[in-house]
Length: 113
Length: 113
Image (cartoon, rainbow over all chains, first blue to last red; front, side, top):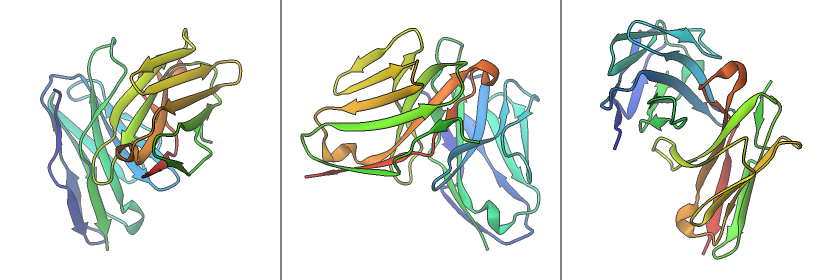
């Protein structure tokens, strides 16, 4: 089974801190994604990456950046955390064209105080 | 502007009965649709999908129906079980989104025993 591992389940950070959320997948998938989940809004795409060192903005990239230095690792960076970035963050990966489904990590619940 | 809409935030069903979760979309270029199930503190897991060339796909207790003319799909769970209680997300891909998934806001299903 594909495994997508997010390094932290729960994080509490202060306003203005730089925050790193790490995601690792073990199935050599090219595509990786970062979503945030908020009540009533569902999952919204922040950034995605089709290959190493490639990144593209999703629907809500403001206040975030990403890094993909290795194929298996996709990091989400909050440059200066704000309270409106309190959310559940979900990382996902996706394999070849024959499979449209994503495999998600367990999520990181981030609280910014 | 949400292109995938789940207009029912929650649904409560008696164990053994049918659960019907609905989803509407606005983008006629979407050509693949998926349902994900999410338990609290876990990432979403893939449940069932359907291509736009079909109008029905069945997998055990789960059936997805697609009505392209109405831009509507539904997930039927028969019979419903308490373990089905979760948040269900509808997702779509295709058109300008390529293989990126666009998610609805989710419907909370509660199956009462």
